[in-house]
Length: 88
Image 1: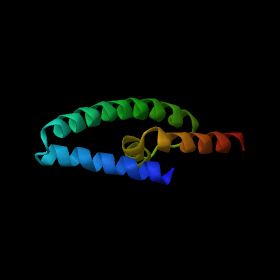
Image 2 (image 1 turned 90 degrees about the vertical axis):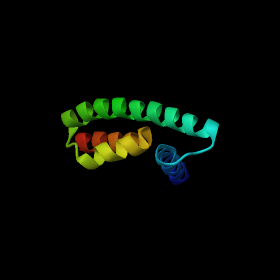
Image 3 (image 1 turned 30 degrees about the vertical axis):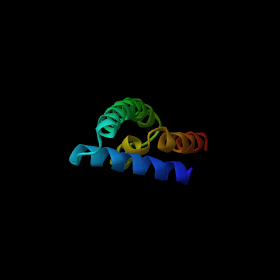
């Protein structure tokens, strides 16, 4: 799981490089398009998660930041923890 999170951080760093630097021809467009698509998907996850977690617990700005960065890799364990806390 940590290796996957590390790969995601490297991906977002690549997207930032593509935004601020001139990369070779095919990579700059591919990274920008992939970053935009993934960012849109993470926004949709964030909206759905925010509504769900507000019904079951507290939603912090850290949750929003981590969801935008890691997406489902952050959401899945967080949702399990909230469900376990609700049962207890």
